[in-house]
Image (cartoon, rainbow, N blue to C red; front, top):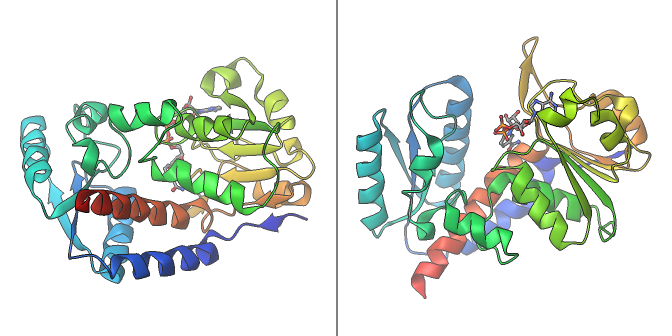
Amino acid sequence: VACILEGSKIKEKLLQELEKEFSKLQPITLASITTLKNFSIQVYVNQQKKVCSLLGVKFLEIHEESAHKIFKVIEDLNRNKGVKGIVVHKPTKEGLNFWEIAEKISPSKDVEGVNSFNMGSLFKGKPTIIPPTASACFYLIKSTGQVLRGKNAVIVGASEIVGKPLSMLLLEELCTVSICHIGTHQAGFLEEYVKRADILCCCAGVPSLIKGDWIKEGAIVIDVGINYKDGKIVGDVEFEEAKKRAGFITPVPGGVGPITVMFLFKNLLYLAKSDLK
Ligand code: NAD
């Protein structure tokens, strides 16, 4: 039976480190921009607000729905010396292009690593700001203490905020990385790839996509998916079955999610400190 990677517990250690570091800083602000109101966005906003209050960071909440107003807000935030990080919540309102908005954030305030400069640095193997979800997955994989070099890493989901950046991090560790996506699924190859994964990271956002009996014996299984099914939050992996075969597995909820928030604040700390130099 797998060792459960309890994000909620691991988070405490990261939080303590952050508390120590933030207490050495002058007051700073994290700006959070929403363009749409829905339940999951509100969950993220509340999570960030809560950590801000624990770390003594001012949380500036902004809601705007028109592109030109959002661009103007970001321009002002880029110039505001007290603001050290800017988050634009995904998904954005219909008709707005998230990536176009992300490009307006100054690379030195891009706390989620979503503009081209920070993404490009990651691609070159010299990252400074990494999208927090990818960092959280990578941290959990490393926390197992397993040798990563030469392992087959399979990522299911190729988004810019999870699958693609995580693939770069695992590549740097000399894993053999396969990125699967909807095309892999439609071509009927998903099971074949998953079955050979020593490290499996699922970030498709499809409940029960990964069958428990596809999991390789002893594999590290990181489930990023947050899906609402029958009034419950579930991941992409059939947890109960998968747990019997995996070496390590993250639960949903309480796995990747709590660590992701910590890495957002690690990025904020890095940006605030770089600003002091
Ligand atoms: P996205 O929609 O941008 O990307 C989904 C990816 O999955 C795409 O590459 C798509 O091709 C692939 N995919 C979709 N259906 C598939 C299928 N049937 N088979 C194989 N691949 C398939 O999503 P995202 O923003 O990267 O989020 C993915 C999931 O991760 C969502 O459930 C989201 O809620 C969750 N998420 C969790 C955290 C966290 O901290 N735990 C953070 C961000 C996102």
